[in-house]
Each structure stands twice: as structure tokens, then as C-alpha cells.
Length: 217
Ligand code: URA
Image (cartoon, rainbow, N blue to C red; front, side):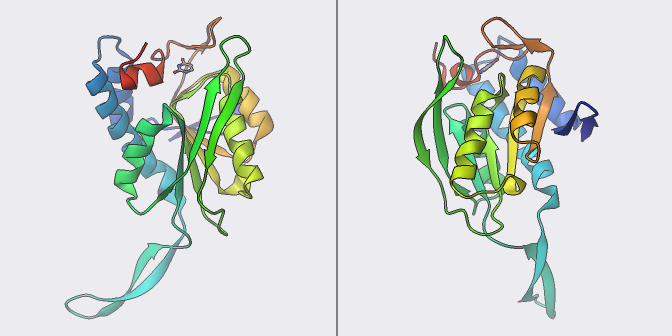
């Protein structure tokens, strides 16, 4: 895991398996099925790093040999919140890692002219004390959707301290916007790319994540 001075709340997950899989996903000849499988696999690996600091408590159990106080994750079940629709592919990988996690949904679409997000659906698990919410969206491009999703969680009663944002690829422009609005939310990404193009696509990026995952145009 790597950090850079410009973005103290950004964590770049440079594990070789994550980097290798991202390269396979970026390649334009990757099939829809291949892209989806890789997204699920990479999300699982990223989730392993993101959950590294979850607090533990102990629970009394009996092994076949003797009783013991064994470590278990403390507090409320965590919540996975994909931003629709591209976040769904990442949520799947996280669920394999944490099957008991709750799942909420934030539906946003991006206005093609203004590039601003419009909300069409919000359905979230209860903001119980200490519950961690992991927001997932593969592309942190302008940062507007990421900011909006965290604003929605704040409105729902979730403090920034209990939010993590997971993006496959981030752009510096979007990170600046996001860090200004939610400096206490930790962002985890597999890559911080070069820049946004005139259509707010990440360069080099991987194209439209939703279209590549669902085989749409
Ligand atoms: N959304 C995408 O799917 N890709 C980008 O490059 C930017 C936003």
C-alpha cells in the first residue's frame, strides 16, 4: 500500500496481483465476461487491504480440545454501498470476502453536458453506531459522484470517519475535488492515472466501466 504527499487520504494498492489484474482489465480486447470476472477478483483483493484495520474483539468458543477467547470482528456488520451501476461488479467481490455484509445502493447518473451526478435511488442499511460503510465505484473521475455518494451517507447519519471509498482507478482532478469535500474519508484505489480528457474520461483509464462490465454501448 502506497501513499503520496499530495493526497494524504489516498491509498494506492500496489499489490502485484492487483496491478496485474488491472492491466488485463485495461486492455481493450478484454471480453465482457473477462472484464467482469477480473473486477470481482480485484475487488476481493482490494477489500482485503481495506478491511485491514477493522477492530477486533474476542468471543468465547470451544475448540475440539478446549475453550478459548478467539478473535472476531467487533461491532455492527459492515455495509457495502455500490454506486449504480458500475459499482455492482465491485460489490460482488467484497461480498465474497464478507458474506454477512449489508448492502445499500446509491443510484446516480451523470449528466453528459454538466458532468454532474443526478440521484435516482437511495436505499441504505441503518447507520448503526460504528458501522463501516464501504462505497464502491470503479472510476473516480471528476470526483462529483464520489462526493455526492458520501454526502448522501452523511445525510443518512454516517460520519466520514466510518466511510471508506473504493475505486479501481482515480484521476488527480477527481481526487482534488473529493479531498476538499471529504478529507477524512479514506480512498483506496489500484491506480492514480494521468488526467481526465475533454469528456471527463480517465486517461489512460479503461474506458466506460459500466459499458465494459455489462456489454452495453
Ligand atoms: N466513468 C467511466 O466509466 N470511465 C471513466 O473513465 C470515467 C468515468
